[in-house]
Image (cartoon, rainbow, N blue to C red; front, top):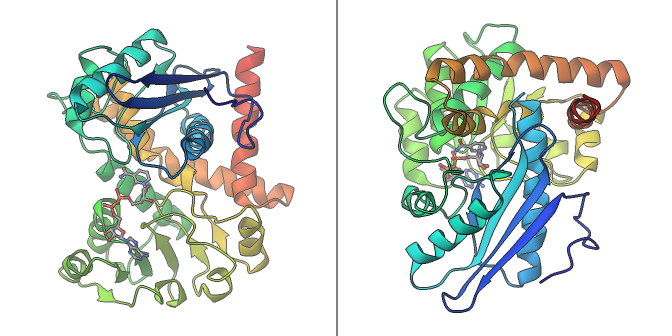
Length: 343
Ligand code: NAD
């Protein structure tokens, strides 16, 4: 067992569970950051790390991130994360073992898919516990692919930041994958002009069917547009790219867009309005949580449509209090959790 309380990424996590099964060749960590607002919700990542220690770092950091994302989305959920860092040959048995560990937490942690996990894995987990989402959707109920909801939340946020109208506005889209392409479709339908870059030529190409122009991958942030929308990987906003960003607004779905804490201040110094990633990309987790909470698609739609209002409040708080938007978002979340603690 690793000592997590003295780990650099430890942030008062409520509990960290280590699962090791030598017979199966299986090792996992479940980190519960906070259950102040409800069961700790957050997916299960399946990844090979150079060192076991890195799996713990991921579990601690990602579970904390889920607390913030879920609280900002006003979901009755706390934050947690599963990380499987050793997978035996009998994958189904390993996932069932993970399900047993989730079950033992008695509902304090609810799992779902994350990087590396599949719907089949969730089916295996579901044989051992009911505290799992990410299963195929049933009629009228929430569930299934979360990315269209993520696209919708980002689209509505961009629309709000441009005062409602997208006609003839230019959006530079980095990454036209599940979320980015869905976003392009919504933007194109409202008359926006698209400039798209993707390392995957086929994904970039399909955006041209929407009338998008293509830009080189290393130039997309330098394109003069009304909004730069990162929908690829994280850490795209950094000391190298921020001085070159040519749009006054950054708003996209990619997780962990700021490479470091200082990058939020760098954007402010350049006069670029940054829509904090976890505020605008919550559509996916809203859909996954709704599946667990037994909510309808109409309820998911209402929760996603509340994202722009939250974003504008975050930006207003940042302006009023002279902070970077990501700091204002964190502050609003901490206040919400403290208020729940008092109640
Ligand atoms: P995806 O894998 O379907 O799409 C990512 C796209 O980015 C791919 O087309 C890939 O080729 C492209 N890409 C990778 N590196 C690039 C680069 N350097 N420049 C340009 N393009 C690049 O993933 P997704 O589900 O669309 O998720 C996109 C981002 O949004 C990720 O950061 C993800 O963590 C985040 N996110 C996704 C969801 C969701 O519901 N899927 C929810 C919240 C956040």
